[in-house]
Image 1 (cartoon, rainbow, N blue to C red):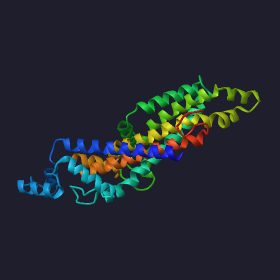
Image 2 (tube, rainbow, N blue to C red):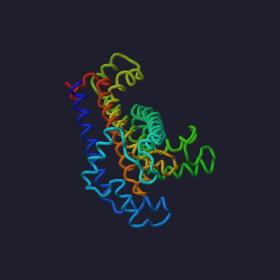
Image 3 (cartoon, one colour):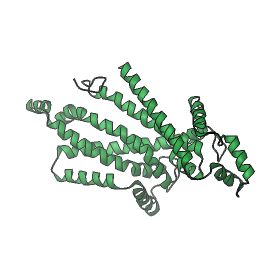
Length: 314
């Protein structure tokens, strides 16, 4: 187990190294001068050539790209993500300030998706072929197909502007979280519901489930005690992967609802060419994505003890 864990952690570190290198390279290849963008924002007018050169020298922008990347990587290893070109604040403090709002949104979206999708998927599988099954599959397809930004604007018009039930934008109490969480969780719910249905149907056709039924057990016991836990293995995998995509989707949803999280911080930084902030947010989201997948990998053994540390069944 420990060897498998070390191998997975080593792989995760390599993935994060690749993400950081690609992000760093692509960011500096984008058109536009970060020195001009930052000074224009600070001064309110076009900066002089001398001011631009001074800014570049101060932030090391006149050094070769590999040298800058090596220095940045060394600073990140010590917990220093650099300083924002725009605000002059440490990037680490900006990440710490925005991270709770994004984590709150991602967790709430996942809770909404699982709470809706798992019962719907189980019911759909148990009543396969009936109208409840048809309704669940159509709703799942709609949830998967609907773009987040479009659903977000619909909920703003209906739930906030017309009915006045929830705030239009911002972050604060739980009322600010309802509409963004439903928006972000709808697509995830559709994916999970379809997978739960398929997984339960496959499990209900196995030999040990037929044996349980032949013993005269109640159908509810057969489904929830014998079939449900084994059907969870692929579902947990998808939930873990979807949680990573939820973090990415938060960029769009936070922009729609003007929620102050990592998503809006990233969008503002990209438009302002604030490269240290872009690199910090990207690396942090990458760490979260890799960590969730590692946790999912380790959860397999709890759900199904027959899975060995290499991830194969005997």
